[in-house]
Image 1: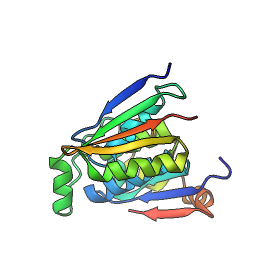
Image 2 (image 1 turned 30 degrees about the horizontal axis):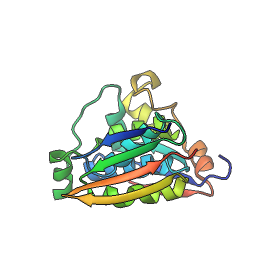
Image 3 (image 1 turned 90 degrees about the vertical axis):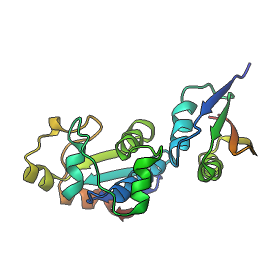
Image 4 (image 1 turned 120 degrees about the vertical axis):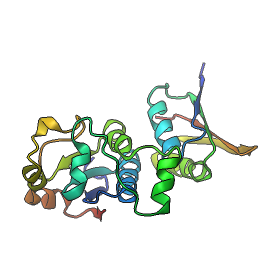
Amino acid sequence: MSDANKISIIVLSDKREQLQMAAMIASVGAVSGNEVLVFLSMNALRYFARGSDIHAPAEGPVGELIDAKNVPPFKTLFEQAVSLGDAKIHPCSMAMDLLGLEHGQLEDYVGEAMGLTMFLDAAQGGQVWSF
Amino acid sequence: MAEKKIIDARGSFCSGPLMELIAGIKMVEIGDEIEVLSTDKGSAAEIPQWIKKVGHELIGTREEAGIWYVNIRRTK
């Protein structure tokens, strides 16, 4: 995959629309031959605690429609990005420390904690998206 | 003899039908045909673009009574 496009996605928000768009770019990007890295930090991370079904609040009317209609949940899309597209999802080590989370407490498709030095190195030369 | 697999993604919104197709395409043999049923207009446009990007064969797309039928052949 050395000739693949690199797409790095920083996910910070706890809002439904932001999480949904990040998950869509991650999943479609990953299944289209891109090398996708997702970096989970700040208020987004707690949703990825194992088995978490915390409700992500909508920012506006479209977020409410996402709830009401049959849109794939953002966690399902992130999981498919990994299972179908070989994306890599890593939690930010700072957010892990602040929340007191260990690797084993996160969903199976989320990898080891990653620090900023490693993330910046991995993201270098590719597209970077932030939500 | 190539077989045809139906993926019924009616009622699902973007990017659900595409992701269902991608999961399904791994389950069929090279040369097999898949027909995706979708009620989401965006997905009916998105799926052919994905096919072109990754290099499978788009057999055709048609709409009947609000349902899009997208036919694909797995080529690799």
